Image (cartoon, rainbow, N blue to C red; front, top):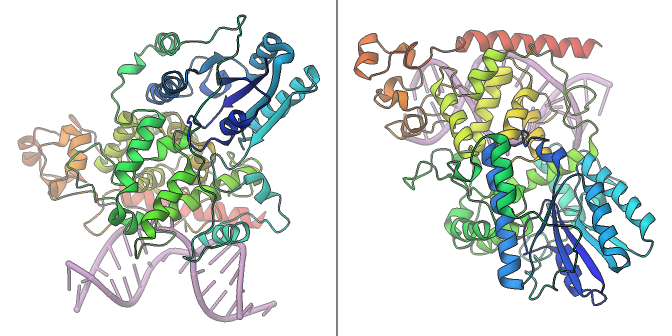
Length: 521
DNA sequence: GGATCCGTTGTAGCT
DNA sequence: AAGCTACAACGGATC
């Protein structure tokens, strides 16, 4: 018996999975072990690094993978918990010389690369004939290692830069589209599981029970809008993108904030596919190609506003996170100006995280994040601007950590990149003085309101009877109106945590001072 | 090498 | 109602 291990890391899917396909096509092996490792370094010793909602999403994604493997292929997902090095030691001991190869996807995070290299070394020491292969172009369209190591690579900072990188790595076809490889279909057959008696897989049920107990929440009953899993991902892709030529071709990101006409307050106005990309239930290549198929049908929007543009920014951050040292730091990070932010202010941070700032739009957005694990991209702009250079003068890293714990689509490269951008500390085009007004008038891109301010009233039900006129600044409503609306500001809903204009003015001056100090160094 | 242009999606106030 | 201007003013690329 010869066995190949297929290690699922951040690509919890069967379609467009080159590591899996390679194992299936390998005639020298007769059994395949699909493996997932629940790593305490990633989720936290007590699962505290991920919100219950993220844990549920991950479990559902694993469950779907396991179910597909067993019901369609007579295989199954082997789930183990622990440090990958220790896990592989156990498995290789158990498989002995029958271990033929290990296939996995390339992961670009510093700790993941370290994991992989030390693992490779240890395995090869044990068994010199084992073939270990890491496959790229899995989580990204570009081959990250290849691009950042090319001679003319420079850190991309704009759509123009990233477009230039695409141009130098892909030819264009007769329609002007980049020639990107088609996604690989799911395999027809997967070879059976090997016999391993000494290592026992965790069942989804056991894992769920254990996690729920540890985080003191029944994670499977967390109110959710995005169910995890490849099956869901492909269903959503079909519903939102594949057949939706008009939607895709007119997609302009800055214009999407108030276009949710579905009548479903939880339904995103954008595709809502990002959670599925982050755990790899959906292949980004497949998404790219489905958009392209729509664009072939006629005139369409262009990067940066189009869906392709959004995915190109995603590639940009993935490259930067690999090529920039200390990508997640504000010191010794060439992509971050070390602004002298205020000390961690627990009161401000809690008000912001819990949606109790007294700014209804900000609070609605933060409560939506807490409940659904998702926020519109412009909402992320608004709340991060508010927390940092706008109103609260807190270090972007504090907000980054909250997002990372709660966002279903959280991704190390993207989350840090977006915070660097929005805090105005990166050399991207975000002038620090360009603030978002958390109390926008009708012309703002942040304006989420139909006439009735439904978005705010849904997420901040304290204000559900408030007249739309005062919905952004309820403290300005006369006391009689507050009483008639069953919400006394300062009692039933907080007063603004800071004075909006004053704080903005002060922070602008602080930012400016920090910059001139940095320049004089 | 100094001037000019440009950058994913701003705001406020005017006509 | 859409479109203009002023605001405040960065920093890298390009010419």
